[in-house]
Amino acid sequence: MPDRPKGPLRRGWTTGACATAAASAAYGALLTGRFTDPVTVALPGGERPAFALAQEALGRGWARAGVVKDAGDDPDVTHGALVIATVRPSAAGAGVTFRAGEGVGTVTLPGLPLPPGEPAINPAPRAMMCTAIARIAARHGAAGDVEIEISIPEGARIARKTWNPRLGIVGGLSILGTTGIVVPYSCSAWIHSIQRGVDVARAGGLAHIAGCTGSTSERTVRALFDLPEIAMIDMGDFAGGLLKYARRHPVPRLTVGGGFAKICKLAEGRMDLHSKRGAVDWAWLATVLAEAGATPEALAAAQRANTANQVLERARADGIPLADLVSARARAFAQQTVGPATAVDIVIVDRAGAVVGRADG
Image (tube, rainbow, N blue to C red; front, side):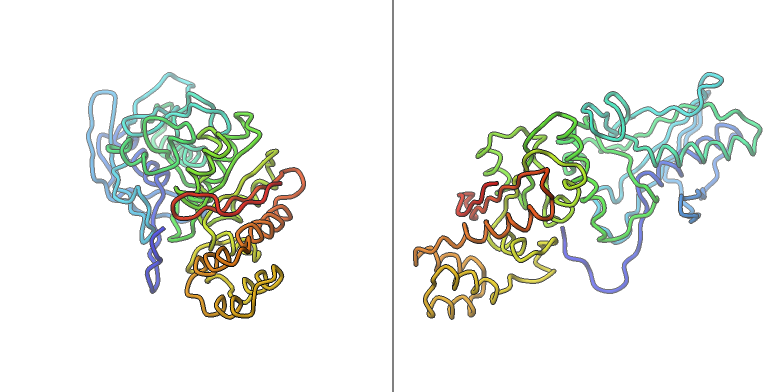
């Protein structure tokens, strides 16, 4: 994730909020023949933001409106995407139904909040749109029986930068957001993806999943255990997000993989492994070395080191299995965090992807 900019950060709006605004404008035009621009929507928390329309079109039996997503200062891959809603009347008593248009995905695997075959429009955005349609229908004495098709041009391309392919969401993006608001750098979307990844793996009956800090460790761990793609959880720096969720939703076996410095932080008892949240504790690392019988010269060098990998290379030269010792401590902390229902393994890899330390549960 890019570094957080300094100063106050501007909030943004979720794809769910944008879809609700677009659907509201389109339905209003379907009933009245004109578009409200800007269109105001009510969010679950009571906020009432106004959205400018970037697209509007009206035909016989349909209306379409589009809103450009503004994610504020959050580094969201969907920032600037055009979210389009096309609204059509449906059969009496049908209520509100949803379709996936261009660039919006379809669920194909169990374990997500929606069953396979459904458009990837999450329950909270669906509820927001249903509420908005009901309010507009009540104002105009209409029944509110409509089909809403959500599309995002370029959504299929953007989705390749997200977890959707791994989660079995094919064809495009998901329409997300529980509050309608994007809080910059809250990391909620990443942690949400971690949780959905665990859900999909569990629903698929997998007995072994793996959370890794990056692509190099992921490739190594996947090959080491011959795991399928849906077993791989892109944990990033959010070890706590994975371990805490796995405690509530256990799997028989969980492997955590990463580079030496990040696994050192896990071994220290940290849940967030990002470099901005602090460097490796050199005094702690020296203690591990001392317990392994390192010489005073090696301990002094560890205290002066610029990087954790420098300490590791010196330990390897001295015949000290430092990465294995760190792995064991990391495994103990992770095991305590995740609880007894899941057996934890730790794998440390170097920059080339070679395994340099390991602790099996």
